[in-house]
Image (tube, rainbow, N blue to C red; front, side, top):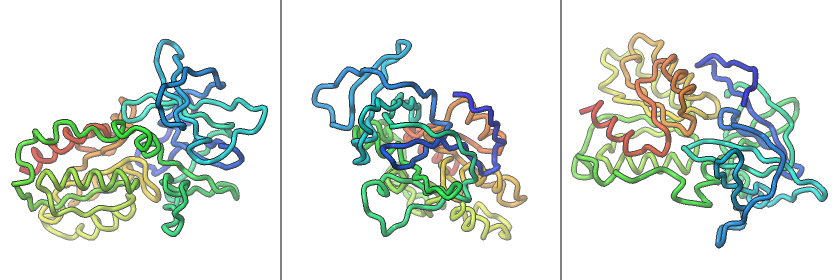
Length: 300
């Protein structure tokens, strides 16, 4: 999907597709969106969760349709068929059934806040951020968690973890810093890295918190003694992974810290952006085993 907005890498900005489910306002990073199309008939899947409407096949590609109205407990207005937002992330092709689309908003991650911790309702539980635009509050949904809740196999690909050499019985003293805004994925990554023998982990829910921690070591002569490696998501409130990487690699002392980007958005375009800000390696989120193998190689 072309937006005609070219974002320079590391500027801490994103393009947010604003859409409605019922009368409520939501958003998704446009980098995940391939296409928007009118709703069409789908083929139901036997024994599938109610939130999964079924399958359809535009241009010979089978795509699963998730009804966000059912996921969020909202209703499709009477007389409306809604729209389908076709997305690709974590190597999955998913269409989300929504009511309508408002448009694309350009916004800084610094203007996106973490969801309030006191809000335990289902919508906040699957939200990664709250954006305020022109007096409107837009909830940015955690689409990875939505899909994973419906199909656990669509989460991280854990295959190969048990075959990684030097796991559990080996203890690495290297400090690993993790920046991941989804509490669900953050815990999965921490657990997987811990099982691989890394027990010295500092985990943060966004790039700004991670940067405040990392930059506190900028006056150290050998910063690798304090931080061995950084693993960062790309999409995060306050500061995204590209901006975090650029700040680290622009500092004369911090730049020696390896930075691995671990995101559902890794494609050829995103790889080029990651390379332009100095990322040492990049992995798509299903590739947890590949990530851990690369960490072990880098710190051993």
